[in-house]
Structure formats: structure tokens, C-alpha cells
Image (cartoon, rainbow over all chains, first blue to last red; front, side, top):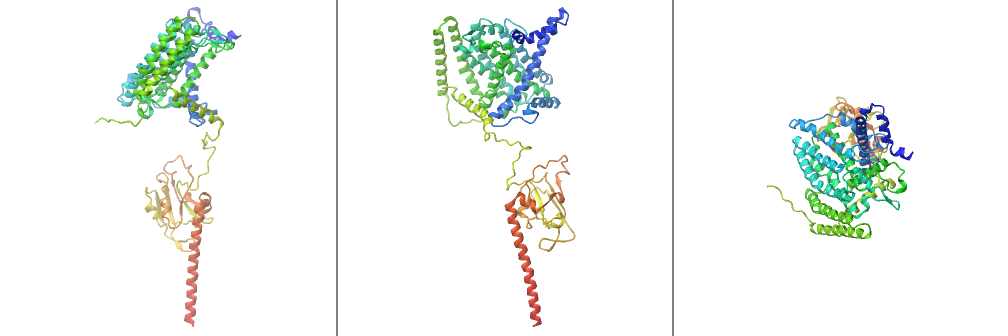
Amino acid sequence: MIDTCDQIFVLLQHWLVSFLPASWQTGAGVLLSVAAIICVFPALFAVAVWLERKGLGRIQNRLGPNRVGPFGLFQPIADGIKSLTKEDIVPSSADAVVHFLAPLLLVVTVFMGFAVLPMGRNMVLVDLDAGLLFYFAMGASTELAVFMAGWSSRNKYSLLGAMRAVAQMISYEVPLLMSSVAVVMIAGSLSLTKIVEAQNHYTWGFPHWYIFTPWGFAGFLMYAIATTAETNRSPFDLPEGESELVAGYHTEYSGFKFALFFLAEYVEMFSISGLGTTLFLGGWSAPFSFLTWVPSWFWFFSKLMLSIYVFIWMRGTLPRLRQDQLMNFAWKFVLPMCLINLLAAGLWRFMGEGWLRWVVCSAILMITYAGMGLAEMRRQRLGPRSYRYAE
Amino acid sequence: MLGEGILKGMAETAKNFFGSYFSADRLTTVEYPEQRIAPYEAARVFPFLVYDGADWEAGMRCVACQICEKECPPKCIYIEKSTDKKPDFVGKPQFYPARFDIDISVCMSCQICVEVCPFEAIKMDTEFELSTDNRFGGLLLDRKQLAKPNEYYHQIHPTEASAVDARLAADKAKAEARVKNAAAAKTAAIAGEGA
């Protein structure tokens, strides 16, 4: 029974596919899984938008949307209908083909990432040996779509937004990869299913998630910072800073193309949270050994939603960074921390079991963090700013 | 320590988030169509015309002097003077507006018409739910739509209305006294002639 619950989607897929002739079964199974991914994540997107608007409202002591349906629950449906029925405007000077392709490319690449994410026990579309590599390849091509959108719009705000987006995403791609490399070093595999398996052990009822190790904790923090920047979420939402750039690279998009950008932003958030869950939070494994009877997909999605909540919480708290602060932070703080973290992970791997590696790794990371933090804060000059204008 | 400020900020927003579910004075939103706040006494939206008594046409205080029409900065008032006269509140025959239109799509709620009116005939309303489905005819209010009884004025601006009523009563008493004095003087003169 527990097993059936855990494998319910896998069994359902097998059952549905079994009606087809044998030669079609593999293809149909893949199609079915793809369809499931394409249905589940946009649905989750609707829920997340509602949660975000409600949560931000509550953080600002407002009610949030409450007009459409009970507690405003049908707000996403209303928004969807609105964006579908709105006029789709293409600026006359825009590069029409690229302008049309950009949102499509963005959505496609964002969804491709889910192909390798294990969303439950045996619930992975393609179990690639180099799954992590595939994921990052797909994640990196979203930058192309963003730049296509900004470039083809022929609008200075769009272009500025796209330039900022590309600069930011490429800068943070490095710490993102570096923080994940530590996990690969310990797990010894680029396959995401193997990484989850490596964390799915329990000692005294507690799991061996990588976040509960010194290098994993530091890596997770760096990963969280980098993902926030990768998904253009506040406080790293410079590419679409509405107070400066109208809406950044999607200023010139309206109607459903705009909705696609919006969808892609959230779906990317899901997929990157899903990857973070897989790498550091034990993927689909239960947080305590006595909870292993709960279906694995439940744990995956609850961890994912928890990450989304932290994203929303951060958005409600932190103000937007300046461009130079953003870059300094990436190259002068996050990246060195990631490199030190790699050293810590290496030591962890080769020092063997025991308490010594805990002390050594924690000490290295803490001292680096405190030292770099102090240096960083000493360098910052607070006081009235002087402005220089172009003559 | 680096990151301390972020944690403090996160704690603050979390406090707000959970606090808004438990403490009513955090959540100050008034859900407007269902819940309302009574308008403040000093609130003003668009002007209306005051009338005394039961019949709006007979009791209208406006004497079509057209000062408000001339003073109105955006020129949203249109008045046509009557040809005949009707008695005002002291019984003196006065013109009245045959047409009095205010285009509230033009009106900027400045209250200058109210300030300049020597007859206490035009006052500011607090009614603000004025949207219509016809943006030309629906927002052009004629004198019938603008006419509202003095009781309504008392209801929305009690202090101001009482002061106005006292002033009008004093004026009326003065006018009556003048009439009486004139009559007394006349009778005295007749009596004097007779003597």
C-alpha cells in the first residue's frame, strides 16, 4: 500500500501505456511524462503566484487579492484569461521573428531542466549520467532567450534590462556551478538520481542530507544566493527593475507572450529550487527515518514549495541591489566562498569519518566567512554619495 | 557580522506576516464595497444646490446671479437666468436658474463656487460613487439632479449647516425688522401728517 502510494504516478503511467502496442510503449510513456510535467508546473505556477501575492500582502500588512473566488483563489484564472484576451502588440521597429521566438525559447529551455530532475523515487524523465551538466546547459541557454527578447524589442529599456540580465546571469552562473561541484565531489556522480541516493541514508533517524554538513551548508547558502540572481528575483531583480526599466527585457511584450515570460520566471524558480532540493536537501527523501512511509513525491514538492516560500519572503524583505554591488558581491564574495568551499569539501572527502573533519571544515568556512565579511564591510564607505553626470 | 542585517530584516517581515493574522490594528485595510468609513465632515467631492422646504423648485436658494459660473476655474458650470421672478426666503422677488448644469467630469472640486456664493445656495457634497456608463450625459448634472434639501446638508456637514442656518435666520430677522421699521415709520409719518 505504502509502495503503491509512493509509486502511484509511475504505476499510472505504466497502466495507461499498457493499452498501446509494445513498440509504441516507450515513446508514449515519455510523452505522458512530458505532458505531466507541462501540466503540473504551470498549475504550481498559478498557486505560487497566488501565494506570492497573498504572502507579500501579509508582509506589508495588506490583504492581498481577495476579490475573485474564495480568498482570491481564482485570481490566477482571471489573470490567465486576461492575458489570453489581450492584444499582442509587436513594435513596428522590432525584429519580429526574434521577438516571437524569445519567449518560446525561454519557456522551452526552462522546461527542459525538469527532464533530469528526480521528483520522486523512480520519477525521473531521463536518468542521464551527466544530468547535472545537462541541467546547467539548459539553464545557461535562458540567457540567450533573455537577450533575444531585449535585443529584438529595439527599446532602450529592454536592451538595458537584457544587458543587465546577461551580465548578472553569467556572473552568478559561476558560483552556481562552483557550489554544485562540491556536491559532485562528495557524491562522485553527475547523475541527479545518484546524488539523491547518496543522501538517502539515516543515522539515528536523521538523514544524511548534504545541507547538514559544513561544506553543504555553506554550499547551499551560496547556491541560494546564486539561484536568486539566476532567476532574477528580488533582491537581484535588476534586469526587470520596474522603477528604473519599466519591466526590463519584457517591456515590449504584451498579452500571452508576456504571460510566457512570467510563467518562465516562475517555472525556472521551481526547477532551480528543485535542483537545490536534489543537491542539498536530499531530493525526495524524507526528513526523518520514521517518515519514510510518506510518498517520496510529497517530500520533493514540499521542499520545493518551502524554497518558493523563502524566495517570496526574501522578495518581501530585501531592497534591490545596485549594479556594482551586485557584481562585487558575485566576484568578491560568493565566488571566493565557493572556492574555499571546494577546499572544505575536498578535505571532508579525504579526512575520513570522525569529528575532526567537522571541526576543520567548519573552522575553515567560518573563518573565511567572518574574515571576508569584515573586509567587505570595512571597505564599504557609508555617507553622502557624490554623483557625476555626463556633460 | 555580514548577513546580520538580512536576518534582522527577515525576522521583521516574518513578524509582519504572522502579526497580520492575529492583530487587527496591523491590518488596516477597509474592504470598501462591503465595509465603509463614514466620510469626514470636512470631506468635499462635487457641489450641489441647497433648497429649503419640500419643493425643490420653489425652495431653491440660487438666484442665478452667475458669480459661481464666472469664478469657476475649469468653467464647468452653465447657468441660464429665468425671465420671471420668484420670492426668495425673505419674500423678496428674485430670479432663479432656468438651467443650472455642472459637468462633474470637468469639475475639479476646488470649492471656489461655494466660497463666492452670497446666497449659501451651492455647497460641497460628500457623495463620491458617481460612475456611470455614459460619460457625456451621465456626468452632466442638471439642476434637478443637483438640488438637495437643507436637511441633507445638515446631515453631511452639521456644523457648517447650522452656522449657515443661523446666518440666514439673522438675515431674515433683520429684513423683517427693516420691513417692520419701514412700516412703523410710514404709519408714524401718516400719523404725523394727520396731526
